[in-house]
Amino acid sequence: MKAWARELYGHLQSISDLVVFADEHHCYYGPAFSNAIRDLHPRVLVGLTATPDKKTPKDQ
Figure 1 (tube, helix red, strand yellow):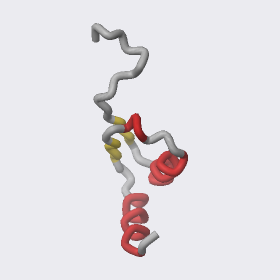
Figure 2 (cartoon, rainbow, N blue to C red):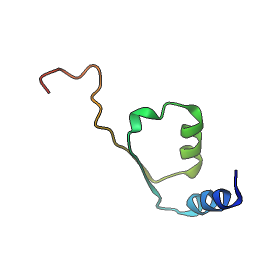
Figure 3 (tube, rainbow, N blue to C red):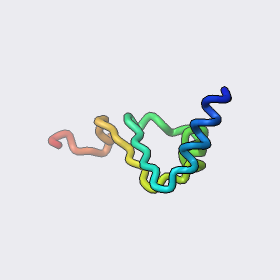
Figure 4 (cartoon, rainbow, N blue to C red):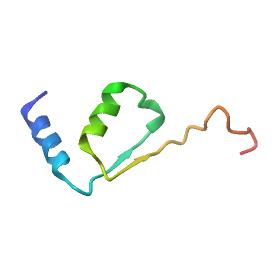
């Protein structure tokens, strides 16, 4: 990881009221993303997606 990225990540970890917005959240299934977000300890994680769940009725 580059020095500036470590610095930024450390800064984000220090924010006590961090809110993370993850656009296209349905794409983030991997453990690397989950661990990175979990290590930030966000107060709120908002996952956004416009992709319907496969179980969503077709009339919705």
